[in-house]
Image (cartoon, rainbow, N blue to C red; front, side, top):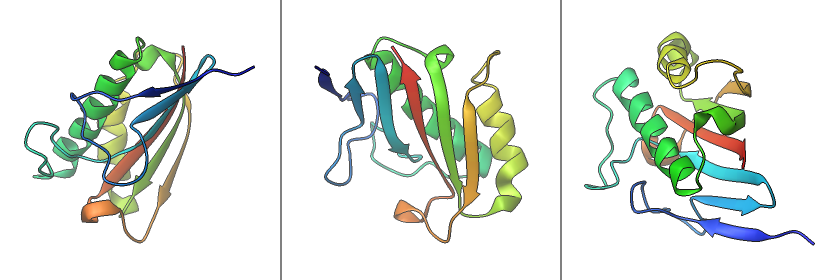
Length: 127
């Protein structure tokens, strides 16, 4: 029988719809797509794509830590970009959060993201 646990933390933005920050099922953690919302001020951090990506990664980090894991546990990521021309800059920031044994990943360009941000990232991790 599988065990389902809801994971939420005040150190990451509150969901803006009918979903949770993360759901843990057995030894897998599914983190909902994160955008660059500052969890303290609820404002979008988007001075530039690098800063925006750092905020997304910080939000993911907070949720991972709430679940008792970190980026070393991430096995799969999905990156959604509003403009594929930002790929290299996003990739550089994203890559700085991993040391080795990089997760599987796809990166796709989409026509629009929530709150008109430029990047959204979701992850799956093992616990």
